[in-house]
Image (cartoon, rainbow, N blue to C red; front, side):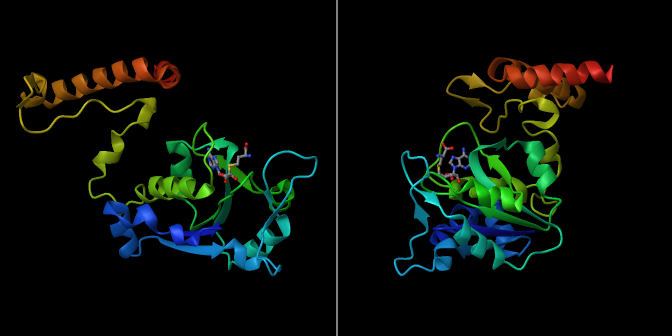
Length: 233
Ligand code: SAH
């Protein structure tokens, strides 16, 4: 999988994706990243890329012609998709990441300032993606999130596939609580069931805890889980 990133701050990469499991996958070339510096495509002496918004208002907008030259400079793969990070986009969810790893190449466009000229999105029919209901100061952090969540879904990346099956958001449930050694810590013991050796009992307990946690912290997911279970019956 290739990630090609249009950014005003290429020096931010590979940044956090250099570490741990994702970092290993990067050095093993299971995925690659390439940055395209938007500023390089400004024809102005000042290398400026933005201007004031038509109609007034705060901040600056990145110009469409500069973004287009940057995009056109990329040699595209056949199975490629373009994404613009934006708080106005569709919310990134686990299901969405699963869908995105079907592409060989993702072209990620990182905005800055007040954003980019709408015509660039219309002309290239670009999907907008948000990483959450809050405003970041640039798309780069969003790109790290997207890359991380996609890469860990690539089959060779996580050693133990089971660890994906029971993760949060599978079946619209959050993960059950986890414990490791020591058995007793700060006068709190690991629940007995987990050391019972009875796998069916353990599964049932974990399912129950997953449901309890989801119901309490994410009633929106809990509703989806309930309606899914009803459909199965
Ligand atoms: N004026 C815009 C926000 C611009 S923030 C608005 O109100 O919608 C600057 C850049 O940060 C955006 O162009 C976008 O690329 C990125 N960004 C900010 N919040 C984001 C989010 N929640 N998800 C993805 N990208 C985001």
